[in-house]
Each structure stands twice: as C-alpha cells, then as structure tokens.
Amino acid sequence: MESIVHLDGATKVFRTGEVEVHALAGVSLEVPSGDFVAIMGPSGSGKSTLLNVLGCLTPLTDGTYRLAGEDVSRASRNRLAEIRNRRVGFVFQQFNLLPRLDAAANVDVPMVYAGIPIAERRTRAGRLLESVGLASRTRHLPSQLSGGEQQRVAIARALTNRPAILLADEPTGNLDSESGREVMEIFRRLNEAEGVTILMVTHNDESARYAKRVVRMKDGRPIAP
Amino acid sequence: MIPLRELLRLAFTAMGANRFRTSLSMLGVIIGVASVVAIGSVGQSGKRIILSELETFGVRSAWVFREWDDQPSKTERGGNWIVNEDIPEIEARCPHTLRVSPLYDKWNLWASNGSRHKRVRISGVDASYYVIDNESMLHGRFLLPADVRHKRKVCAIGTEVWYALFGRMTNPIGKLVDFGSGKFEVVGVLSDKNREFLKSIGSQGGENANDRVVIPYTVYQSKYNTRGIRALQIEARTMEDAPAAAEEVKALLSRRHEGKYKYHSETMKQYVETTESVVGVAWWVALVAAIISLVVGGIGIMNIMTSSVFERIREIGVRKALGAKDRDILIQFLVESATISTTGGLLGVAFGCGATVAIGFFSHRPVDISIDFLLVGVVVSLATGLFSGLYPAYRAARLDPVESLRYD
Image 1 (cartoon, one colour):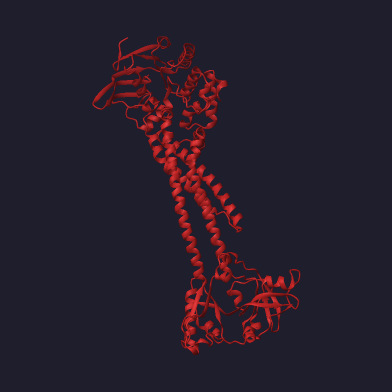
Image 2 (cartoon, rainbow over the protein chains, first blue to last red; image 1 turned 90 degrees about the vertical axis):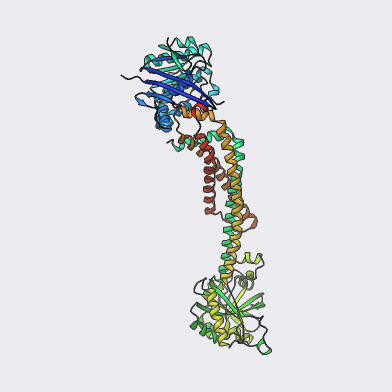
C-alpha cells in the first residue's frame, strides 16, 4: 500500500531581495497511513515550512509531493483549496478559531466549503464536539472558552471532512500542561482508535512522546535519528 | 459554491460586529437612494398632476384666433375674421382636423334664477365642443346639434353655478336661468374640472372651469348681436397632428378672407411638451445629485471594505486553510459589501417613501410613491455595493494563505 504522504526531494526556496533561503533543502519523507509523526528541530530548521507544504498551503520550488495518491505538486490554486478542504485537517498553535462564530459554527466552516447539506453539517458538528468533550459548549464564542477548549474545538473542526492527514503546528504551545495533556490524549485516541494519520510539529518533548516516531529537522533537512 | 443563506449570515455577522462604522458607511447610499425615490416620486406625480389638468382642455386641442399685433389698417381693425360659413369649409378641407367649434367667452356676467345670483363665465360653443374640450356630464346632457341649429335657449352649467343658484339638494335640470336677457333652460351639469395646480402657478389656463355656463354659439351670436367668431377650438386627429391642423385652418381662413387678417394659434401640445421638458430638466438635475451621493456612498463602502479586509487577513488565511477557494473569499466579501449597500438602499427607500408622503401631506397634493424609482433605488444600491466591493474583495481573494496565517 502506498504511503499517505510521499515527499521526494522536496525543495522550497524563499527569495528576499538578493538572498535565497533554502527552507527545505531536498526533503524525502514517507508517512504510512495510521502513523503519528512528531517533527522536531530548532527554529529556522524548516519544520513549519514542511508543515505548510504538507498542508498544501504553499507550493514546492522543486520535488514531488503525493498526498493520498494524488500528485499535488502541480495542482492549481483551486484544486489545492479542495485538497486542503477534503484531505487535510489543521490544528494551529494559536487555535485560529473565527472569533465571531460560536464553537458549532467554527466546526461548520470546512463543511460549508465542502458543500455538505446543512442537516448533515449539524449532526456532524454536534457529534464531533461531543467526541472532544464539548457537547455543552456548542453555542459559546471562542472568547468564552478556555485555551484547552478552543484547541479541542479546533481539533473537531480539523476532523469534519474526515481528512487523510491531521497537521498540528505546536498544538500545545499555547496551553498549560494539563490542557496540553488533554489535547495530546485526544490525538492519541484519534490515532489509535480511529487510525487518523497525524503529523505534528512540536518543541515539547513530553508531547513528542505521544508520537510513534520523531523526525528531527536541521537546516531544511531531516537528520538521522 | 457556498449557499447564499450562509453568505448573508456571514455578511450580517460582520456588519453587526461594527455597527457604528457600518452605519456611517451606509449613509451616502441612504441619502442617495432616498433622494432618488423622493425626487422621482414627486417628479412623476407632479407631471401626472399637470398633465391631468392639461387634459381638461383636451390634449389634441388647438386654438385659432386673430393675431392682434398685425398693425391692421383702419378698415380692417373691425370686421369679421372668422364667420359661421368657415366652419363647414374647415370640416371639409382640413384633413388633420377632426372637429371644430367656435369659442366665445364672456366673463363676470350675473346669472340669476330670480332669487339667487352668481357671477359666471358664458361660453358660446358648438355641440362638438363636448368632445373637443374633453367634457363629461354629471347630470343631464350637453348641447345637441339641434340646439345649435334651432338657436334654442338652453345651457349646460358648471357645478358651482348649480350649487350657488339652486343648492346641492335641488335637481337643476329643466330649471331656468337668466343672464340679463331672456331665460335659458338648464339641460345638463358639467363634470368638475380640476385646474388647481395651473391656477396656483398663475397660468393663463388656470381659470375656474366650474363656474361656466355653456350655451349654443348661435344663441350667443344673437344675444350679443355679433357675426364674427372670436376664436376656434379644434381637435386634431392626434396630439402630434395639432400644429399641422392649426396651420391648415389658419391657411384656409387666410385664403377665405383674402389675406385681410393674420391668425395666431396655440396647441395643447406646446403646453404638454413644456411640462415634459421642465419636468425632464428637474429630473436630470435630481438624477445627477443622486448619482453624486451614490458615488460618495460607494467610496464610503469601498473604504470600509478595504479596512475590513485588512482587519480580517488572519480570518481569510484560516478560511483558505480550511478549504476556501479564491472565488469563495471573493464572493464572501462581495456579498458583504452588497449587503451593506442594499441595506442602506432599503433604508433609503424607506426614508424616501417617508419624505414623499410628507411632501404630499404638506403640499396638499396627491403625491404617489413611484414604484419605478423605488426599484431603481434598490437596484442601484445593490450595484454600488458590488462595484465598490470588487477591488477589496479581489485583494482578499488573492492573499497568500501562509502569509495571512502568520499575520497579526
């Protein structure tokens, strides 16, 4: 069976004026379905860029990226948006909930872009919020929720369209250790019980211990463990 | 494609988040649309009022009378410039003319039924005048051709004459009226003619039409011992034909009177056209004013949308990460700006209707809200929103997801 993520010689070059920055300098990465990968490394090592590439937020300068069997290196802007919508779930360090929408409406957003009928959106949003322990918080605005609760809403949102991969960028970075543990427990459950493939950037060794394996980045390349 | 319902919900959420700023940016559109509706309604109503009063003269009418500025020689200062024998000739030889009637008018005569008196205007006309002058009867009948032919002393009276001489409760038909030389039998009451507006602007045509007494012109000629006809009122085939009809009649009269007199004519068409051009000028001025305020309103909306896009760069990044296409973002912001402007437009319609009703109330004239201008107001406000939202929405749509997610 082919890997969910197949990255081959991925290169990403940023150009600022005369200076070229090789954020990714030929990364090859295979992530089989059901894996749980922690990506670690010092800042500037290219792990955020790697996550943006994996999330189809930014195109590669060179190399090949296949996600769930589809070559996305040459996909159009529109197709990339569809792939982000259907195949990728994002969890951010800053939670990035839309401040004027309540928890249920935030979970709703990816399903709206997927064109799912409202009745099904309601049930799915309800079920997902329940699964992250927020059944009683559906009508709350993000500002009325704690950091841990906001991050759990974000996880529910990331899962709405049953993505092939869940990408998390320092998911516990803005949380106290208790909330951070709760979030990591949810990740573990999703990975073990439901087989969700997770790639997570983290600085936190404790969070990294939840992963099945760790990829360490330096100077735009994974280094041998 | 996102359902419109979702888009509107998003738009109202965004508007609600900054009510004061949103209201301010709506102001231009509100003022613009309100003025379109009010000015359009008042303009159309005014035009309708004037035209309906002009119709009381018959819009196909033309008047032919003597040109008094022609410096006549002594012998020609008097004379009969139109005579009864001209009438059948006009009817036979003027193809643009449908009907013709002599028209005598005498103002400020006393009418009396023996005990009550009323100052009236006497008009001597033919039976055809009924159609030419767009008359209708409230009671009884108009003058008949036989009345004219046999010089019967009969009359049709205006309502004010009826009320003054007999009272509203008395049927005037068959009653006798005296104008100082013999009694006339009342055969009919003429329907009221409203010339209030023409009167209020001091127009020559603004005389009271309801204190008239209409008698056969043949009787008038005997009564005042005259053979010369002072003026003719003719009905052209169409309003457009009226000037041609008048020229025809003038030419025929000149010929028949061997060029002794010059004739002058006026047509209702002139007055209708004058009305339309005056209303038209007012309409254009109003339109330009409305366009200016809509442009200003549009700039206001463009301004608020630009800052709205700036404030929500992060939201745009999140939406893109969650699967929004460029098109989805574009449409979201377009719908938002169209919702702002259309809400302003609907408020403007409401204010415009209020202003129209108020103008009608204080001017004591029937001013009706113009549905046409109401629709124009709504459509134009929608278009203003779409147009002024276009550039900010385009900028939002083109934002890079990674950059926008990093934006604080």
